[in-house]
Amino acid sequence: MKRSKGQRQGTRSILRRGRHQRGRVNISRIMHDYAEGDRVAIVLDGGQQMGMPHRRFQGRTGFIQGRQGKAWVVSVKDGNMQKTVVARPEHLRPLE
Image (cartoon, rainbow, N blue to C red; front, side):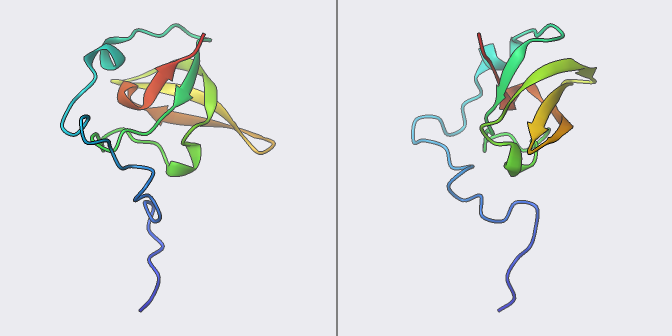
C-alpha cells in the first residue's frame, strides 16, 4: 500500500488528547489577549482543527507579530529561516 503523504501524517500521538481533556475547550486560552512582541509557545490542540498550524511547528516558540481575523500571526524560527505562522489562540500558550 502506498504511504500517505498528507499534511497530518504521523500525528496520531501529537494530536491525541488526554482522557479528561476530550471535548473540553480551555476558555482562558481562547480569551487571552496578546500584545505585539509577546512570546508564545505553539502547542497543537487536537480537539480544534480550525486555525491549526502545521505539525512541524509543534513545541516551537515565537513572537506575536499581529492579528489576522480571529487568529494571531506568530514569527517562528525554523532552522535558519524566520517564518510566519497563522494560528488561532487555542494552539498558543503565553510564555513569561
